[in-house]
Image 1 (spheres, each protein chain N blue to C red):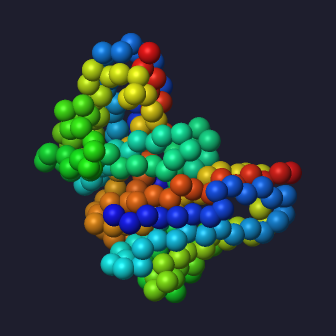
Image 2: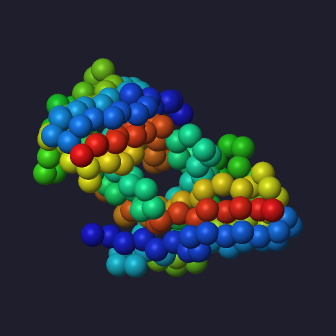
Length: 116
Length: 110
């Protein structure tokens, strides 16, 4: 099956640091990648949709200057949390998909981000 | 964007029991309904993508049905095993985006 690699899986860093998370589709070309955030006991919340070669589309309430998304190729998207603060601590997970109505999304393992 | 609701939130069953849980989603402008299984420390795994009213899909002991007119889908697990323990997520495809429910956490005791 389709494999999506996400890393790092765990990051602990000081407030003010910028953190980059990578999401790679290893065995297929992903026309679209998605970035989600999950707060404790809540569902996956879509942050942004990333299409190769174009600007990401951010969901309402997500700061595009805080969460920079780059989708440089059909196999790689990155999420950079800039100048991270404790309130940015969360679980972030990416997914990749081929564009078709009956195609599932293929998820990475997620990144647990802790800002001290 | 309209909500997707799952029930129950959690479920504890004995090995060998059959179980089912529900996903409710907006029936207007239906496009597709996804089911995923998410085991601890792993990535969510796609189970089914359902698009047609009346669809019934099966994967081993797991099956799902879809009613797009009334906006619900059921997931069934026959003869639950401890390895079925996971969170089961459903998601409605709306405007090209998946809107997830909160999931049903299933625990199967040996």
